[in-house]
Image (cartoon, rainbow, N blue to C red; front, side, top):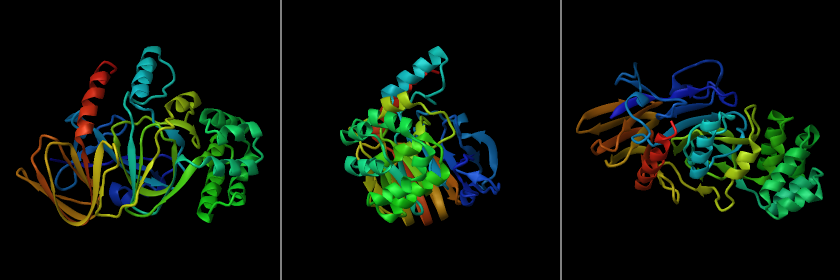
Amino acid sequence: MLIVRGAVKDYDWGVVDGLQPWSGQTTGGPQAELWFGVHPGGPSPLVDTGGRPTGELLADLFDIEAIPLLVKLLAAARPLSVQVHPPRQLAADGWREQQASGSAAVYSDPFEKTEMLVALEEFEAFAGWRSEVEAAAILEELGISEQILAAVRHRDRATAIRGLLDASSPDRIARLAEAAQAAGLPAEQVAAYATVADHYPVDQGALVTPLLAYLALQPGQAVYVPAGVPHSYIRGIGLEVMTSSDNVIRLGLTGKPVFVDHALLALDDQLAPQFMDTRHGDLIWPVSAPFVVRMLRSGGERIPSGAYRILLLIEGTARVSSEFGEITLTPGTAAVISAQDPDSHVEADGLVAIVQSTARQTEFVHERWDVARNEY
């Protein structure tokens, strides 16, 4: 059992000092994400029982077989990119080809990224597909051609997306909220489109957002986003749990590279996001998810051995004990417990996120790690 802090990511869409309660840092700049895991993009630093850095990283001691999940705290002040995460085979094949050819860096690693967001405060997102009737109604108000509208109505996603990227203009982006209102959307959705237009007035990908369903989460509610599902988080503070990957393929709302062909290949129309109307204290276990989460609001719980576990304190205090001893967590610190460690017990006076990989995840990680050994 070890104690870690998160690795800070200062992406420009973050909230100014938005993660200070957990990062312990006041920078005067955006704080977007805190990463808790071993991914090379941001491995977690180890701290001692007093919260002081030890000079080591979690990745110095464990690899992705032992730490198969990446947990993040996220603070979004404005919309993140419209994106899709590649499924396992596409990620592995794309990474292999990229490494062999030296082509543009589309894939960050050879792994699938499947994720869930749990709202800590009110959180807004675009996730999955809006009904084709609503999407066409919004786009018709923008004067989009009948050819593109027909693709939208027939769920020809690739043709619709390519057409909308080509048809995008600052004038149409500026009228997104007006079009949403004219199409009869509720006020909160109209406001979301106004936010997109305000922050991305010349970004071609802004015109893709009418294709996406809107979702508003209250604290404790969650959305599970399998690889292959398009999404864009709009604003809010939340906890993200995902497989240990940073594979993001973008379609717009970003200053980073956009790879339309790769993103369209990654889309899976057979999958949809899963909304979970949960509250703090409920067990959150999406169908087919490689992890299970409980947001424990005060009280105690046994944490069984046999799988990777991470306990991240959100507020208050928590004590984690096992036959090896007891540690006390403060907000922004996490107890990392390997599958081989014994049963543990947590006693919380506040809110602690208990994240555990599942048996399915263990099998999946071994499969994908065998592939990855030949890639690195």
